[in-house]
Length: 243
Figure 1 (spheres, rainbow, N blue to C red):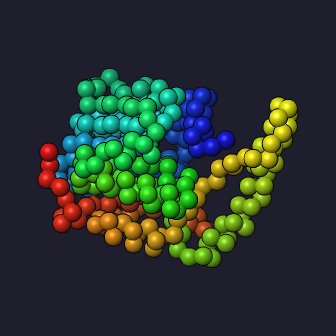
Figure 2 (cartoon, helix red, strand yellow):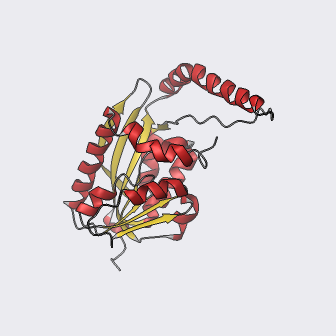
Figure 3 (cartoon, rainbow, N blue to C red):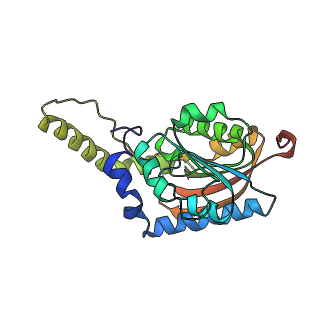
């Protein structure tokens, strides 16, 4: 299973139901909404890009704020679920697009007041995660909100590998056994595991892009990392005039 086919079918249909009552989900929601309000206090937010939007988790929130919302996701099944999250209010400001995030982002520059990406960066190695952050910044005129898992030092990375090793081996063995049962034995399996990223590396790159991390909220603390939401604002010298 890869990141490109993980969120289809039954997984998409059951995604929210399996998570919405958890403490982690509640902490993420509180952190996200606080950061959006912080951005709105600094000036009007008229347009938002949510990428990947998944099941449209943030649609009701932005509908209440009367913001032009565009959600993009590669999974047609996630988009179908997101359609159901478009409430009975004004739907004119809601747009949902089935598209690959890596192809969509580079084609849109300085187009939105706010770009957001949640539950996504941690599936990628750091170089790729940083490239996604760069594209989110390029697409935004004012603000970016990211959801990211970061570690402080190499000791945390080593500890995480020790802790996660049995889980990784177990998942890999299960994938091989599953292939064998289907009569097509293969040892080429991409067993997804959540990545954490070196805080300083990511922060330095954001600063070099001409952005400031205004606020950080810790949504979850782990022994080997912190899961955080960051509100980033484009420095005045790098801002483009509104269209």
